[in-house]
Image (tube, rainbow, N blue to C red):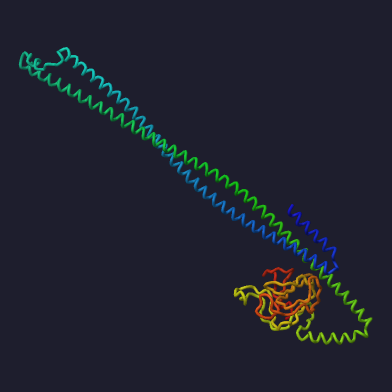
Amino acid sequence: MRMQKWMLSILIAILVLSSGIGNPQVLADSLKEMKDEKNAIELKKNSINQDIQTKKSEINTNQSKIESILAKIAKLDAEVKETNEKITKLENEITQTTEEIEALKASIEDLEKKIEERDEVLRERVRAMQVNGGSVNYLDVLLGANSFTDFIDRVSTVATLMDADRTIMKEQAEDQKQLEEEKKLVEQKLEELQSNKSELEELKASLQSQKAEQDRLAAELEKEQDKLNAEKVDLESEYEEIIELSKELELEIEAEQKRQLEAARKAAEEKKRQEAAKAKANQSSSSSKSASSSSSSSSAATSAPAISAGTWTKPAQGRFTSPYGYRIHPIHKTKRLHQGVDIANSVGTNIVAAADGVVFRAASHPSYGNHIMITHHINGQTYTTVYAHLSSMNVSVGQAVNKGQLIGKMGSTGASTGPHLHFELHKGTYRHSPTNSINPVGIVPF
């Protein structure tokens, strides 16, 4: 749709131009319209290019954010993996502890059985003491011996019984204490493992939640990146269209300038024919005018160069002060391409057209000052000449000029250090570009 609008503008401009061939003012106006259209396209092109650069910057910024988030995701993945390994290790420890608890349970059962058996023995001892009046009289046992040997046996038996009682009581106390300690130790270890596992599971859940959030952000940024890339592609496509349109319009402008040159040539021939006819019809009065004209021409010749034979002629008399090429700019003090040549002379020195052509610009500029640009069509090739820093201009846009015709006066307007003519020669239509300007020396006879 955008391209169709631009093409429609060009078609309208072409129709306007085609309807004005032969009228210099119409030609000038139509050419100005085409140049305005070209300038509008250039502005649009620059705007699109700026938008493309902005999109590139946004894409780079977005890509940096994506890479940062992906790095965080990778770190979270590593932390989740590490946490999973810790959980697995804890689960193995819990399994091992559970197995230890099961083994301890069997040991506890054995202990409880031993304790129960000892309790039974102790209960039997208590019952025996109750039957015997509440206590065992070991002295009666000893005094009841029938012989010394029997006495020794009885002493040994009593000592054994007393030791057994003490041993049973001691073992009972120790086993009960061991049972309490082992139960407490195992339960404490299992509780710690379960607590650690719960903490790790909470950490894992937190890490997975963070990772999910980062994944969401990454997905949004990837979506935004796709959108930016698509917009960039659209802008680049539009930029290419604008470039093609600019080239087409440039060709149209060049063609129109050729048409203007041809129209100007025919108009000049018609003017000469009419002047010749008028001169022949008024031969008597033209003699005195011719003398006056000769006097005027002679006066002008003192400051205007002689017209050279051939296509080109020198645009002004004076000293050749600066050639074409790179130099240190006299005002800006930086190395720049001097896209023309300089001819110095006094203010008011005549400036003439270097070749037949049509004026397509006569205006003021901060750098060029008062300047004139003329389009020439020579041997199938278009050229543009520039005459800058003028004190005055004697031609207007759309006017056809002949080689050697007075077009202005030398001056020092714009970025100038003294009165001189800055003269440029461009191959094709004018563009302020090092690739467009050419060295006029060797083409224009200086």
